[in-house]
Length: 177
Picture (cartoon, rainbow, N blue to C red):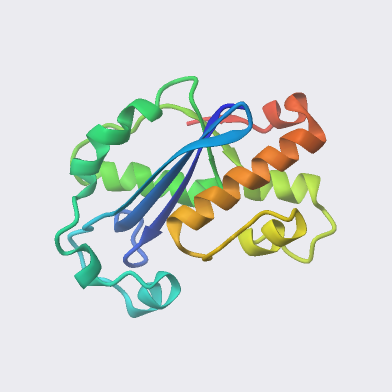
């Protein structure tokens, strides 16, 4: 499989408050590249979010905005390009709303949600949180809620599920954004 695994962390409950982003590029079921950045959301942080991901306003004060990050990554979000995320509805919405703040059009791409694939392919797990699925599939998750760690785990989950279930089972779960 060839895809990009994506994960965002947000500064607060608003989806347009992206404060970190990681992308993990997979080619032929192997991780071949990684991209990570903190993002200045230009809005206040919620203490609850800081507690989860440990990113503070000081960490992002000199960081690029999403409008500045977008030109570096936009070519990864094209029709026909597959993007994976664990709870993809959240991450795709963060991307969409973070871009909309800067009047940047929403990209169109293919998406697969490893939360959904895990519910289907790993039905006996007690829950389908990223850490639970990672542990069950023996996928490394070195720092839960660090966007790079979460993206690597998402990629690892989809790779293992693809190896176990095959291309057709995975293709049936791909959606258009």
